Image 1 (spheres, rainbow, N blue to C red):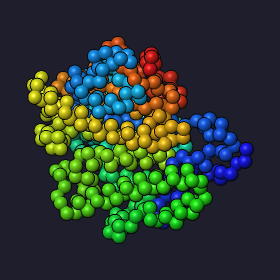
Image 2: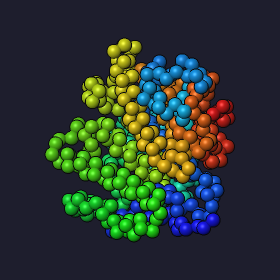
Image 3: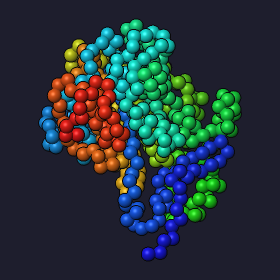
Image 4: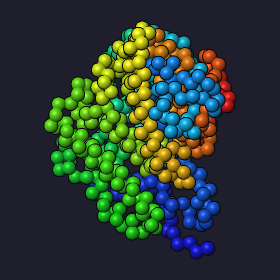
Length: 441
């Protein structure tokens, strides 16, 4: 066999003025020895979290049947096209209830630890399991992890005598270091792909005024690289850069809209005016971050606990959190289910983008584990029992989908954390209040 492909280092970048853009996995990055070496290349492991606030109407979330014959309840209907890579997990518990129920829900979800009562800056919880993975994977990527949200952080006290820090994030680098969640797509884009040699606000404003594209600054480098690639890699590079260009243009359009119109109440400038536009833009940025291997760990909050967001796009003008105290009112329960289904629809968009993005011998969805769920079940009672949890993706062959797994009541949520970390190749003995791996997962 004659080998003609040029071998590229896995960490190849396009560099321009103020921009450094990572590339997707190209065939030319796999050592050009044989077809066998290409298929044998082990895909990297990736881990993502998508968190929803204020609980769930569990009757519309939980399948009636267990095992592979499970039915798809109303809230999870948008995820039905991904059934073969979906595992519904029920029965898990996030510890006993505490007084600051919303702060506990978001804080315990990934840390396994309740928040230390605090109204000031001296906060404490536990290192979150996403950061355990980030510590292992971050040695291979430019960013150890990425923390995103659709809502900006609040300040002061957000739960009973408890700092808003606990409801603003689900990611903790250490027991005393919560990680802020970024909600502005422009800021995320620049964090991933560069902006200028300075973070000075005036310099950034000047660049935005000139509307100079980050991609324009690497155009010449990209053209040189494309000429050196084979046809398949050249097409893959073109598709990737086109996706980057599309995201950049959408960010610019949202900023132009903000300049013409008043933003929604509680919406910071620089974000799209509508919920689905904002959500899908943030999901697209996550796909690009994974595709370029800038990071392998992303946590994303669709909303923060106590979220009072309204959803006029689907006819819901009542605030989310007050609705969650439904008092078993059928109208409120139906509205809550509509909101949760709407969240699942946005997630389905993300999953389709992951499934459509090639990665080695499969797709990004094939090679990742995505944890989707909430830190409380029923919002009316703030219950930490029987949490709504769905796992998505193939985990590089480590995760079998198409199942509903029902565990014994009060099984610790941290058993799931230990199991997932081990499936991701991160060795851990225990995590939080874990007792063992989850059997059958």
